[in-house]
Image (cartoon, rainbow, N blue to C red; front, top):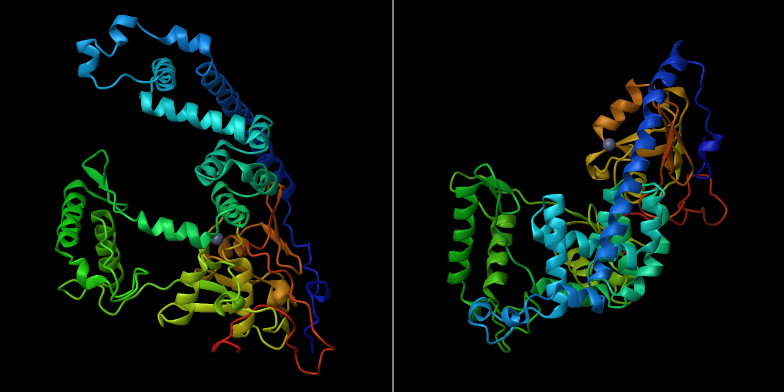
Length: 477
Ligand SMILES: [Zn+2]
């Protein structure tokens, strides 16, 4: 019987003799297109980098006193006493005048709206001046424009002093992950480096909650759901009416962090509208019974020391990333409908049940779920909880039921693995390498760097409970 020390190295190697004839021709035919496609993507990245360089250059130009002087119009017309200028509001200062003039220059040249052009110039300057490592990697075609946009999203508003360390920490990831996956990693890393704690930032963030209605084309609109314009408008109007009807004197029950019974903290209209939206979405029921008895479930990993209030390490919300310790604590402690996972270095789970059982025990499933977070298919982001557990070396070829031989694959990726000539290999730590029919390899590292559980003490006869993460309910203290 396999013990908990079993690793995939102990497992039989998947035979590679079953490759049908003609596979080399298939591989060559695919590679003949994929290789130029990779080169094409490199060139597109380099072209994006060059455009960013030119726009950043223009931005610098707009800061030059001689250029600024050249951008000023007729001194009579720009004068504060000119009635025509005065009618248009106060005159722009030199900086704003330069920015707007040059943005309009770009807008005309590239057939863009001047606001779009201004944003492009701003982003280009941000990239070139504050993220030089990303600019260089883009110019060399090592990352795509989509990765740069994610990095810009993540770093907008972040303090300048953390950017060099952030770049150094995540650039390598941008070269390996999809833009979406990379964005999550970068956000997590920024949280770690940020000089202001996540708790403080979340406290500010929650005061900015609001509902946004945005018109779109073709009779549609966004209420951050893509809806018919009239329905979106009516929904927004209903939220506004509900928000107006809310009597804040009754709502000071401490739920928003205010001391119950103390000074009433009035919510803004935006906040009340957002709260109405949240309550209707999370708990609302329609007259016909739609939504009755159905509640959303989320998965949260909470470090046990955070739970005990002895650490400010954030909790991890599956499919999102770090959340503030206070919210993590509240979710783990109070709300029964939230699925909570406690992590503790001393809480064990079984590493392997060898060939005893095809189905992994619950704590092994939980361990791989925390480790993988998402489907481990190429570029796939479907959550682990909506995926299936796959034996990398198939059970019917002798593969053991062990954490080093189990990964999460969503239905589509699972099917691809079994029905196509894609092949997979797995390391004991959970990294999964796919080999494509075109002869390329792609490795998915486990999303959660919790590492391989290391067996504690000499293994007893039965499968041991090594150091690891796992589910513990009730809390182990
Ligand atoms: Zn998948």
